[in-house]
Length: 536
Image 1 (tube, rainbow, N blue to C red):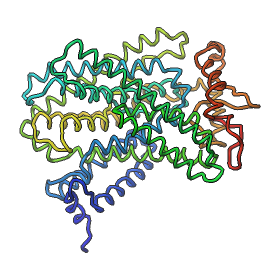
Image 2 (cartoon, one colour):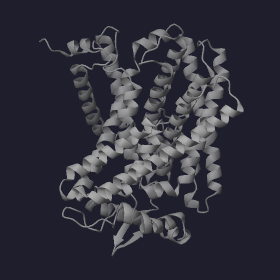
Image 3 (cartoon, helix red, strand yellow):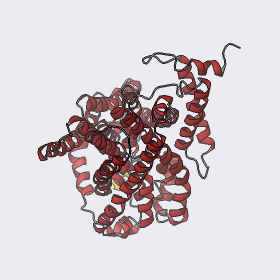
Image 4 (cartoon, rainbow, N blue to C red):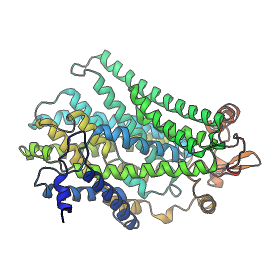
C-alpha cells in the first residue's frame, strides 16, 4: 500500500514554516481523539489525570516520529507561542471566568490576590536572584540581566490543572476557589511581569526605571481588568437591547463567542494582559449577558465554551509533549550535558523553594484576618495549595520560546539550555506531580472529612438532576421575584453578618446595573426564554 503510517511520518516536517500538511493535521486530530478516549477510560484511575495522559501520548508520539524520520523531526507542528497565546489560551481562560462560582471567588478575593499577585512576585524574585547567583558557577553562555528577570517570570507561571481535576468544588469550596483563583491571577501576573520586563532596558536599573516598571505593571493590571469588564457589559447591553433571540438564536450565540474573543484581541492590540481581560469578561458575561439570551442559547453557549476550553487544554498538553523532543534544541545542548542537568536541577529547586516561601507565610497572614475557623486555611490545605502550584505548563514553555528563541529555533548554547531546562521542569513537575496528585490529595483530604455541607450538597445534587446545564455559578434561588442566597450551613448563617460587601453589591447591582445591562430577573419574557425560577 502506498499510504502507510511510515509514509505519513516521513512526510511530516517537509512543509514550509507557514504551511501545515494535511497529514500533520490528520494525525493531530487522531491523537486528540485518542487522548479524549483514553482520558475517559482512565477516569477512575488512581494515578493518571487527563492532562498527564495527553502529555505522555504526545511524548510517545514524538518518539515514534523521531525514529520514523531518522532523527530529523519529533513533532507534526513547530511550537509557536503566537498560536498558543492567540488561539489556545483564550478559550481556557474565558471559560474559567464564565463557569466560575463567583461568590466563592470574591469571598476569598483578598487571599487569592495575596497568593496570585504578591506570592507570584515573591516567587519571581527568588527564582531571579537564585538563578543569577547560582548560574555564575556554570558555563551556560552569556545571559543579560533581562534574561534572568524573564526567567523568573517564566517559571513563576503555575499550571494547577492536574490538581483541579482531582479536587471537588462541592466538597472543598474554599480550597477549590483558592487553587483555581490563584492559578488564573498567577498566570496573568506572570505574563504581565514578562511583558513589562520586555518593555524596559533593565541592563542598568535605577530607582527611576524601577518606579516606572512598577507603575507599568500596575497600569497593565488595572486597565486589562477594566477593559474586560467593559467589553462584557457592552455585550450584555447590545444583546439585551436588540434581543436577537426573537429571530435567531444563532446570531446571539455567535455574538457572545465573538465578543468574548474580541476582548482578548483588544487587550493584545493595546499591549495589555489578554488573560486578565478575557477572564473578567467571562465573569461579567456569565452574570449579565448569559441571562439576556434565550434558553436554547444558554445551553449552547454553556457547552460551546466548555468544549472549546477542554479541546484547547488537551491540544496544549499534547503539543508540549511532542515538542519536548525537538532534536534541534537537544543537539545544541548535548555539547554540555552536565551544564544542562545542573541548570534544570537548580531551576527545579528554586521553584520548590519559591513556592514554599510564600504559601505558608501568606497563609498565616490570611488566617489572622479570618474570624471564622471555617474560613481559615488549614495546614493540609496549605500543603495542597503548595503542591498544586508546583506544576509548570504551557505558559512557561511559550514564554521561554518568546524570550530565548526566534520562530521556534535557536542555535545559541545559553538560549537552548534555558529552553530545554524549562521544558525539563515542565515535564518533570507535570508528569511526576500529576501522577502523585490524586493519591496525595486523597491522603491529605479524605472524602469522608468533607461532609460539613450535607444540606447544600443534597439540595444541589437534587437540583443538578433537573438542571444539569445551569450549575457552576452562584447558588441562589429566585422565589417570587426575590433572590435568596443559599447558605451552606446554619453555622455560616449565624456567624456571617448580613451587611457585607456582597450585600451592598447586590443592592447596587439590582438598583443600577441589572436594569441597564439585564441579567437574571431583568429580561422580558419571549418564546424560547427560560422560566424565572432559575438555580445557578
